[in-house]
Length: 289
Image (cartoon, rainbow, N blue to C red; front, side):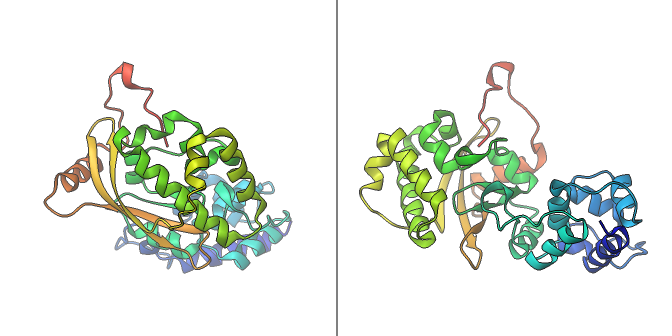
């Protein structure tokens, strides 16, 4: 591990990011051109002391998880991320899909600017990669699972609790939309084994999925009108929009409501209560999807 080169690289990347690039306020007393060390540490979920030691060329070799978090915090593209792993003498991870995927910097930069509306970046299999606080307050944080269960599409057809986020009368609509979207993803990915295994497993486990799959309806989910069940605010009517990455593997989702509607008022209240648990003790089983 080249401590000095790693330290210099981290500092050079930190100096290039403006606070506004990552949704942080720009104060009048800044003495550095980019982010402060403690801000990078906060964005990466690290202690300020640990990150400071890295920039000083000290400390133990960072793990692959730490490097991935730093790559995300510093908005590194694929080449710069690989270089970071080389400097730390860690194997460069393969181009990943799923929850371990490197969030594409363009989508992450847009997410940073969406501070007043729920927004999150997901994969084409509906695996949540990163979300802003309002999205976590609206739909909950993704479950800490790996493999097929990380996909909301998979959980939708295999775990009844995953459906509690939508009213029961809306479930048939969402089932159709999920399957049509997966048909389009399957065609785009070609012979991708991950998708083929998921489809085969869902056909085996869910008669509903199998019947919908055999209709061969195909439609990417670009936008939708949703009613979301929130444990404190009740049913919230929102419009969900999608922005696709250039390769189609990731999507930025954000939720809006027309001004003056009840949904807009509920979003305002959501920004106040955040992720506070306002339920009674017998309601704590609300699923996080």
